[in-house]
Image 1 (cartoon, rainbow, N blue to C red):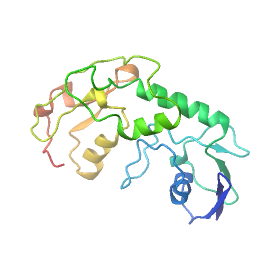
Image 2: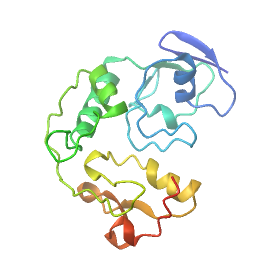
Image 3: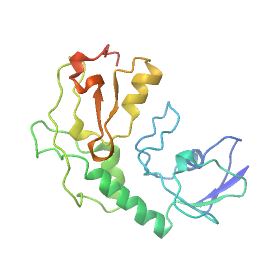
Length: 192
């Protein structure tokens, strides 16, 4: 099948997604929850695109490619919506320097936000969490978490441990362990 993305045609195999086309063409499109080794989660909503003849702004990671599909990653409406999503996502974090410990920027989120003209979040973070350093292998820093779910999927599907998960609902959602205890109280094996 042939798909056109930002005016560039590409041939794709059956079962490919629009994000597959975007990545093969080397088009910079945020994809914060996409682990290169896992199926897409569709949690971050940052890979939004415009599809000719289709309403809304679908996530490229969950959008099956169709022969003749015309996709625009820079359509004004999709850029506006994606910029707002990135702004809200930035607002989930507590920037380095505002709390103990220093982080090296926001990684992929910082790059994507800057590309969309979002250097600072428009809103303050809703929560400030204590770091959980009770496991010697890593520190659970919820203030650096965008709730993409990659860690929970890796723990559950890849390692088949299920020590961490997304807990709560709505604004109270956070990464944690069963019973909302410390990492040390979990079944985490520090597998890495």
